Length: 473
Ligand code: FAD
Ligand code: SF4
Image 1 (cartoon, rainbow, N blue to C red):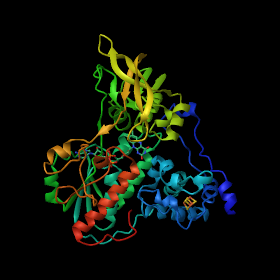
Image 2: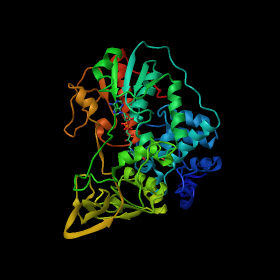
Image 3: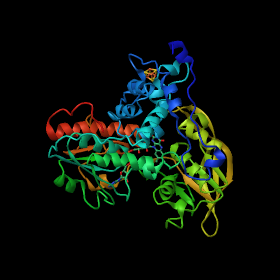
Image 4: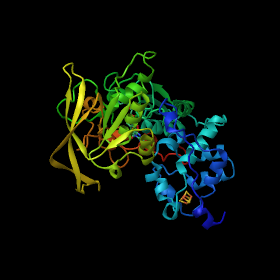
């Protein structure tokens, strides 16, 4: 294809299940590219000498190289090319915000539509798995060094993958009874099917990583105790502690944090009560407060639990919503209502203590704040009351305090997260940290990038040598 024709060629749309069908279950929404679609889409790539797409990727996936392999129909080789820098392409192809990373910086975005890099990443990873082509990488001789990774979210797992590839013995400690962090208890199955997550976790097991579940660091053992057993510790405990609105009535029954609501459904399988013994109350008039991925995931989950009316309430407007555009569109197609410029001030309830309504202050947009988004300003005296029987609060999260509280010599940042230097090292000898516990709630790929950078520092710390090149699971 000539260059002009490539620029003009249209991006392959993603086939999806119809909205009315998909709200009946938790199965995945996008169906994935066919081989022909993938080859056509990858064929639009200009194979830039200086690929700007790679600049936009936090783990520097070799994007033009894997796209070229797709055009040659070498799908398994394409997946392996990605795995040189990203151990979890089937996950990242589904949940990474490509529109603000690699696809934003792709040169084609300036003159037309960028290459659908995420969809192609997902395609090759699925192809490799479904065709039984996943190869366990060759492992080097053991170095004799041992590392504890605290937390099995994407940050911890990416760090574990690299360290295991370099011959270190790695044990992941996880407080829940299943590993994956937010990938398992936060992101719903209709966005990240558990067979996909499990397959990528199995890949980690083939690298020899040991996982100890139901292990609460700070209770079962402290960081100091882990250091007696291991040469270094990587703390990747995430930002799983919910923030609340701190307004009257928040303790009423059926007012949940999104964290509790999603964990009950995703991890404890409340959607399959009574087969699983963890019900969740989800009435017919659900209000979700917030506008990020978490809020949108909670709203779409409520729809799938059978709620008639699900309304997302946000104090700004649609363009300021931090959730991924694709997810907002999917939510709207599924019948989730969006109400903007409203800020909750109070919940009121029945004599039995169940929530019945939410009072909101109406807002208007003022000057931009430090994030560049226009600040919501109250319109004095203008309030409204929204009847509801369930409220899900999704306004952000904080660092889980257990590890910091039980590790007195671990310095914290002013924002309340673990403080690190440029190498990922904390104030405590032999202890490194990364992911949401350092940055606050961010993205899967940023946590993975932090895990990989920390793995390099840990390798240098343990061996005094530079890490081998080109690894990463
Ligand atoms: P986590 O994934 O939070 O993992 C931390 C792990 O540590 C958990 O398993 C936790 O149980 C464990 N842990 C905590 N304390 C202890 C302890 N004391 N002992 C042992 N284990 C402990 N990002 C995207 O890029 N795209 C998305 O579409 C997206 N959607 C999201 C949807 C939801 C509902 C949520 C909540 C987040 C979403 N994110 C998304 C953000 C992303 O998931 C996080 O930024 C990422 O998971 C952070 O990874 P992490 O490894 O730092 O922490
Ligand atoms: Fe291909 Fe876009 Fe990357 Fe250029 S910037 S190599 S066109 S994906």
